[in-house]
Length: 185
Picture 1 (tube, helix red, strand yellow):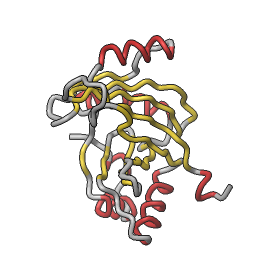
Picture 2: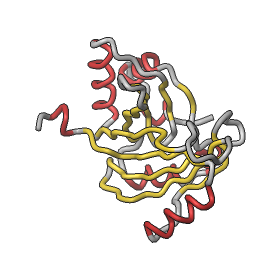
Picture 3: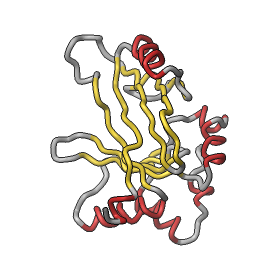
Picture 4: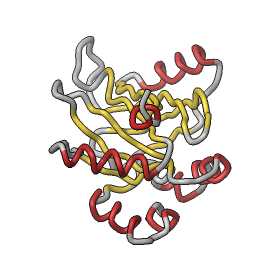
């Protein structure tokens, strides 16, 4: 396996649901643990709340299952239910930014770029329009990462903020400390 491919691991699977409580309770029973993060998103146009189950941590990699409670009717077949996206985690922010550069040179641009606080993410659509999130943690240690996840700053804004990828990467490479870039309003 080349270094370019070896630094990426499946990190997150996100499911949309219109049956949030039954799904949360079912996964709590299935996994034998409750969500590590559960929060409302009062300002999001489609997602009412979210829950993250942390399955495994091997810092900087994590494995999470997330449930997004979406607005909509609970019908058997619905575009609001099922897989939202999956995430591939890079071992460092530098690896993520290098991959961004490589994809950009191939004409592949993210459809969305986010600073989530705990991590930075670029979202892409594959040829079938599946959403793929490429991400990296924004902290150099597990303790810093977990402390931010438990902070009032993250609790107040678990979704994070939209960023301009080129500006964000440029600021970082020009010497702006990552800690300054990842602070959430």
